Image (cartoon, rainbow, N blue to C red; front, side):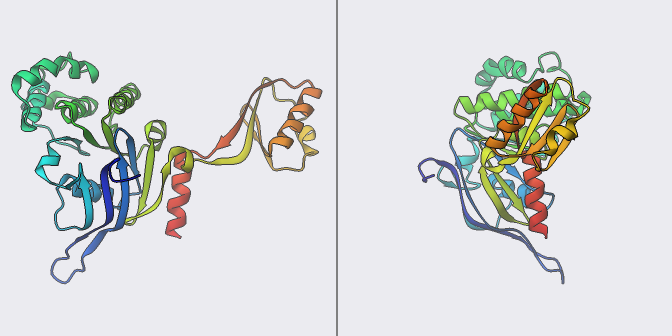
Length: 311
């Protein structure tokens, strides 16, 4: 990816928190480098203490005194001209509880330089997007955790930014709300908005992200597309209409590792052996519902990488 295509460009980024008294300082970022393309959904993953929140704070201009290069829209991270074009939903955000949902959205949009008429014209659409029309006139302190997260998402988007940082966007949100947020994020990408997500819910990241960076102890340990990070395991899963009692005998001839599943079995085999297994099952009148090559989930890949790094 060249510089012209990159909306965020980071090279050899380092951040050390100074120590106090006789305590040694803590290096949170240790030479981090990556690019984020325009109009993409980018996922940042890592265990607690990996440096994810520090990285976002650097990009937002909330963590000064860093070393290396970090630019957004070609401007240095934290430049006010860049920040006006950014939306931000921080983790465990605190919205003014004495304001209503509408007042919160109006306030944050005007902080970003939008006029009140401009905001009020778009307000109904954003409230509908996050399904908060009915509760928009209630005080924020009366909201549930999920409702606060919905209105928090709306405040990050109300001024129609070009780049959005979402730190744990589905925290405290029910399954219906998580599906809504996924839809909103994908629609933003389709409109050309870049979305930068930090989340512990790897299944969510796997479903929507175009590219992922995995961090551990302040360093990048893996970067790639979701497809690159979730390769095939070599195992093939067979779902059967009815599992035969003599399944052990049917599969014994193949001398390959296999294991029972709730609806059939999985076997470690290549394409040629897969066809032989199919032929043997059919010859024994075993009905096959489906066959699928098993891939690593992003969660499995993440755990493997992080535990290997720890070792």
